[in-house]
Amino acid sequence: MREFSEDYLERTREGMWDDSRQALEPLELDSRERVLDVGCGTGELSRVLAAESAGEVVGCDADTDLLEFAGEHVPVVAGDALRLPFPDDAFDLVVCQALLINLPDPEAAIREFARVSSDLVAAVEPDNGAVAVDSSVASEERLEDRARRAYLEGVGTDVTLGADAREAFSEAGLELLETRRYDHERTIEPPYGEAALTIAQRKATGAGLADDRKTMLEGAMDDGEYDALRSEWREMGRDVIEQMEERNYRRREEIPFFVTVGRANGP
Image (cartoon, rainbow, N blue to C red):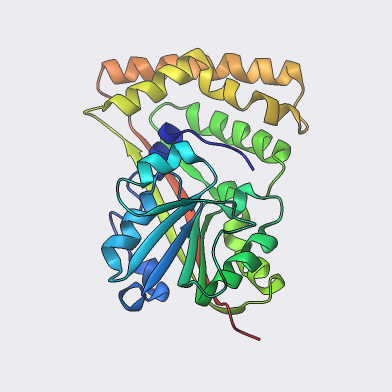
């Protein structure tokens, strides 16, 4: 499983569910007694679950450093998603967000979720192949699409799983109840915050792209193609900074998430 820093998790999940929590309705949070958030990271989803549920919410993650952040909001336990440190039927809802896309065997994780749930299992997973970007910098959408496709070719897990999570639930033996779509929108516009400025600087230096270089080269992209992309990427980043200085830069990114819910004790 890939590891992520607290800064990365907070940045990519920032603002999720702030505009609407309608897609979480099938989880029936107001009636839950014990909820487990697997792969909770820094606890972004845990906080939402705790706000919506009258019962206890517990966060679980293999990364103890991330649990320090999540532990400020909910009780936390260190544990592997494939070997959860809980007895059978310990919770009446087990949920994860953007976890299955990082696992080589998502069905095995879903089966483990079902083991510790007496009722529902839910997965909130993105389709990273359907991300839409609209930017005031003309080249940004094209370059991000190219980089994303190179990354998807090289990554070893199904990071587009969201739209097809229903199949994983069925393969794991759960009774499929419902799937709802939630589009997470992230925008950058003036006035620019510190996070937006950091993102722009990483584009201008190529640092962000360099983080994914190894994965990109695992696919069809070769060193020459990567170097050419990085050169264009850095030029694009400089255009972003120039527009920021003039307060003209705007960017909107839309990521489709799918909330899939199943019953653990189904046929």
